[in-house]
Length: 336
Image (cartoon, rainbow, N blue to C red; front, side, top):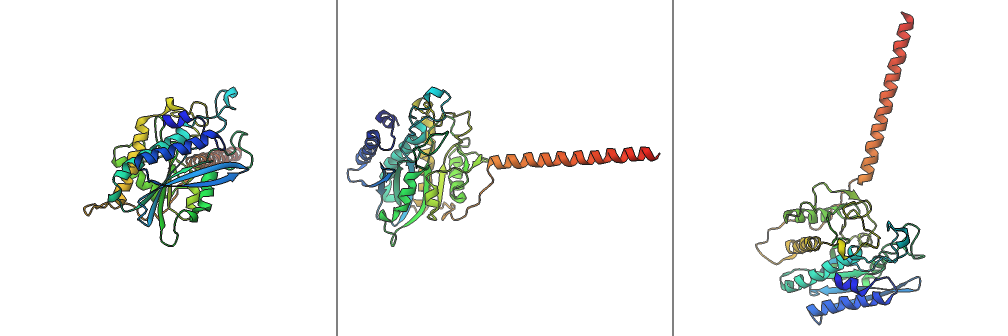
């Protein structure tokens, strides 16, 4: 992660963005000088953007996608210091953390490649984090532009007659202190549930709670869901979280990153791959493959609103009841 932040602010259209892609290429070439990679170039409102895809085990037709965004937000629109809101976000957790985990997963899974029965894509998205927020956003830009553009061009990156996608796992804000994942509601529930179960089996019960907070997050996995690819977003509560309050601020830097959080995320995804794709006749693991079941729960906010409405309704009924009783008592007294 330090390397990414040392590059500078990875804002779309800047030299730092270009340098970050070159950094990813250099890290994968350290793994294998012939590691296959493909660049996905596109423009948004004349700004040049670029996704980058690395492929492992191309001899397999079934594909697992592991993704993260690498761009950092151009303005710290949620910074508590008003004067800092025009400054860029370092993007330590929001961007660099997921990319760092992908690089480490590539190193580990490469060493096990002959034992794995799937093709793995390591996919880095540009232009995820420049949408409208607190009156700032690059004009004409939406959130998650990079993943939307990639999915619209996805046929250029695989043979749709011979290859198929089995799932997509997105890593977003996975390195902060006090890591605790939410039950992200756009995610395919059977896939996300399996990741949570694996995390808890590994002993990470705080990070993967049995009763996690629920919320629907606009993120890079949604474009893949639109292609009917089972997808899950490993993400935290970033909007109202006293344990990690640095989202879209100038303090999203290395001082609030935990190596333990990065390790937990990486080991959980690594174990997911081993559980489902490790070639071992003694492997009796039964997960939720093909992750077709999708049961979403109401968001935490919706549940709270329903509880409040029920309470208000109950109070109103009670007041009406007592008012009616009081009226009846007065009538009885008048008769007497």
